Length: 281
Ligand code: AMP
Ligand code: MN
Ligand code: MN
Ligand code: MN
Image 1 (cartoon, protein in one colour):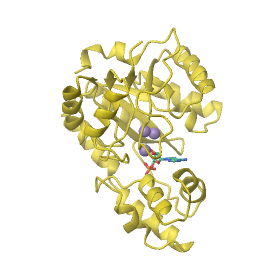
Image 2 (cartoon, rainbow, N blue to C red):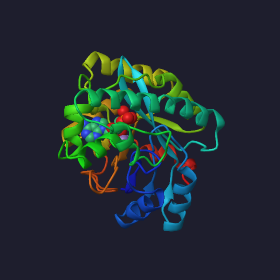
Image 3 (cartoon, protein in one colour):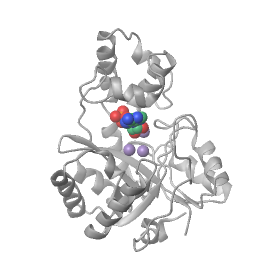
């Protein structure tokens, strides 16, 4: 089976490697079909496409859109769209809007528990001024010696109920799916096991996603256990969704799953890249 890795992040969002360095690492790890999926941003797509070409690797355009569904944040990966589509670029720009204000509020929350200068500290790690994220705060808090690693920062400071957490309204599910579809791409539910939905909420997510034109789900990802992959393989079949595979790689120092270093998709599933064959560059 094809070694496809269709989910990772560069310095254009919250990864630590440039699109070019990611392409080289993917190639060295045996990736045959690659997609860069920066959060709420397609500014790295042309670079990624050219880097993939230079490495002799097939490429699908990508992004990972932050969506608010049932009061929670859900991520929708888009693949194989036209990265010059103006409506998609505009929707993503609006989704990014508000990140700076949110980051200021996060910093205020951290200051109340004695952590000073977190906004400026996080900014040092930011590659894209429109994309300051919790990941950048986590890197600063590790550097400052507040926590030993980024998962600990999220646990203690950056998740619901913790001092640096600020609720945020992202894009609507139907808009995210439509931006991707209208730009010629395929919308995919990212890492479904990560959301902590009740069975009813999860059923609602998959049902509404399908109704809006969503077509795929990540089954094998760096953030699923093998049991979770089996479970979402069943969900893919139940909802008639194609299956995707991606490491969600962010950094050599932080990510447990390297580019391309994933189990293959379970049998019986339709890989998203079969349906996107004419979008592969
Ligand atoms: P944001 O879009 O600013 O809310 O940041 C979300 C990002 O934080 C995700 O894309 C992950 O890269 C990272 N993240 C979320 N939860 C965790 C966690 N528990 N441990 C480490 N990183 C996390
Ligand atoms: Mn991320
Ligand atoms: Mn995600
Ligand atoms: Mn991701």
